[in-house]
Image (cartoon, rainbow, N blue to C red; front, side):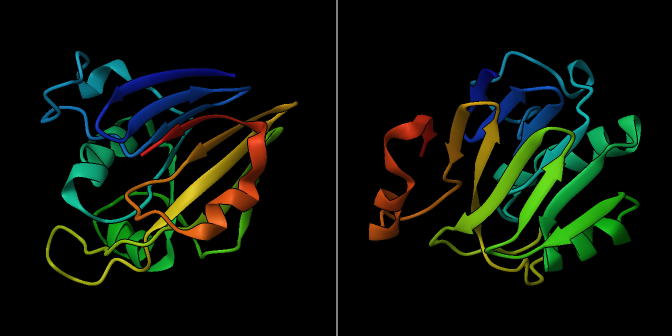
Length: 156
C-alpha cells in the first residue's frame, strides 16, 4: 500500500488499484500536481464541499473512472456526466482485492450548487494486512477508538 498526501484532504492511495480520495488538486496551494497527472481506477469522496470534490468531474470524465460517494452526492455527480456508485454509512465496497468501509464523520455536506450532498463520511481501507483510515472532515468522536491501533495513517 502506497500513500501520497496531496495536501488538504487529497490522497492518492495505491494498492492493486489507484484510489484518489477527495481530489482537491488545481486550487489546492499544497498540491504540486495538476489534475492531468492522475489516472485513478476509482475516486472516493468524503462529502460534497468544493474543497473535497475539487477536480473530481474533470478527472472522472477524462479517465472514465467510477466515483464512489454518498447516494445524494453520487446522484448530483451523475447529473454532471460522471459515472458513479452511491453508498451509505455502514456500507462496504470491494474493489479488486481492496476493501473500503464507509464510516461516520461528523460534518456537513452540500454540493457545489448548494443542494444536499448526503451525510459526510470517512473510509477505512484495507489491502492485505495494511489498513488506512481517512477521516474526511470530522469532529473527534469516541467511535474512532473502535478502529484500534492497526491504522497505519490517519488524516484529519
